[in-house]
Amino acid sequence: MTCLSVNVNKIAVLRNSRGGNDPDVLRAAAACLDAGAHGITVHPRPDQRHIRADDVHVLSTLTRARGVEFNIEGNPFAPPRPGYPGLLPLCEQTRPAQATLVPDGDGQLTSDHGFDFARDGERLRPLITALKGCGCRVSLFVDAGNPDIAMAAAIGADRVELYTGPYAEAFANGAPDAALALFADAARRAQAAGLGVNAGHDLSQANLGRFLAQVPKVLEVSIGHALIGEALYDGLDATVKGYLRVIGQRR
Image 1: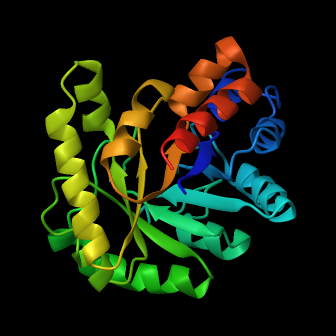
Image 2: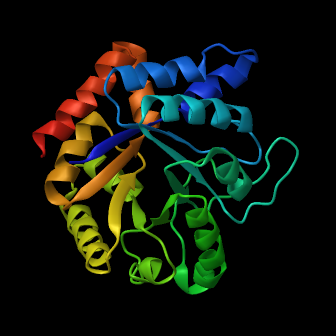
């Protein structure tokens, strides 16, 4: 079964635009879990543009109390700065079920590419070891066309998360078949190397079903931007349940 982890970054963006605590990230995450989501994802950035370190701590407490997965995404190479202790220290403090490593920088509006393992593999290896020492399952953000996906297993990762932005764009343009074939091949190559497969970025209720029907054995999808946008019209409860129906139809 594919699990749904809801990324609540966009709730924090809205909150931060005015200051204070409205809308409440913790309350929104609890509403997603009440609706049946299998976990919560956050991506704290050094510039604190949305999720902050204090959010990570309270969401860790919530997910632990609910017995669901907490997934922290971030760049393991980004140095600490005031208000941001660094990805590894955050994971050491909160012990998430999963740490997803993403090669993003401050200048990126959003995550838009995966790791180059030929360049970054040996730098990642000790960080993966340290995260696994915290009890975290480790997933690495990758492009479907990366020929070296199997290297993720060689450096110690448990899973890869396929960056699905190119698929979503192809779907929106009415020509998803080539992208789906590429992603299906990437999933099979990862699985052949012993890796679990997650997926995320620009997935929506419109394009998720087609993706899960064509890409084998996706263990988890992490969805935030589209889900929160759809929830502005239909509410969090109805929207999360809508995603769960899409996932359920593809079992």
